[in-house]
Image (cartoon, rainbow, N blue to C red; front, side):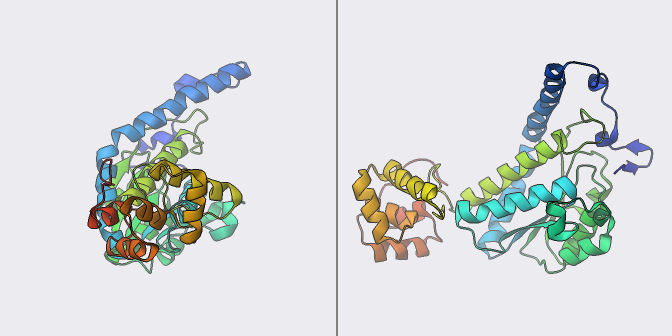
Length: 309
């Protein structure tokens, strides 16, 4: 979708002079061109880390009060938001509804293009209608002008939610609806207008970083370990054993036995092993520490080790 602000064409819609010959070079060179452009996505995210950190801190504060985070996007942007939100549930044992991805066109748009859905301001407003002052609304729009995202940000802001726009357009029309405007300066795509390339990659990196930092801030990790993972299959059950061993230096048999006693839950198992308490006391200490292993160990007077998380 081509977006203009006055006479300014969004960078995502401009032609890239570095790839004008992309259809006339060998395949290896095509891939090199794309890879060279992709590197810009990483650089673009590095440039916005201070703004992103502020959003994480604000979201974490609201999250602790029971607030929620919502992503809104169309096409690639919407799919990336839904993907990020859905992966948090098993990885961090996140309760449904705490981080939610919304895509223009609904579930069908996840696998089939519903191109006109992005043009509906009304649908965007409807998707964000339930947000309130403890919530955060993050709009994802490479061009910075998707009407669906604009409708969502407008409604969210009217209801007191903090609004964020993530785009690749420094002149994004929707920036006026955002309390925080995060601009990923990825520039023109290797194939003109194909924002599933580096603009989408940059959005994915932002979402990875944002949601991971948020989960760390609210105690869903300990050190750099996924101690909140839900062991829903054999691979993950084996992973929980390895994580417990790494966290506590227990032998494999002892780790498996302890996990049996905690119903497969890693956090209480770690607190039992390092805090020298029974399962019930470990569970209580975690509850008192808002689910943080570090806080629970500190309350029990046990060394937590590592940097705060």
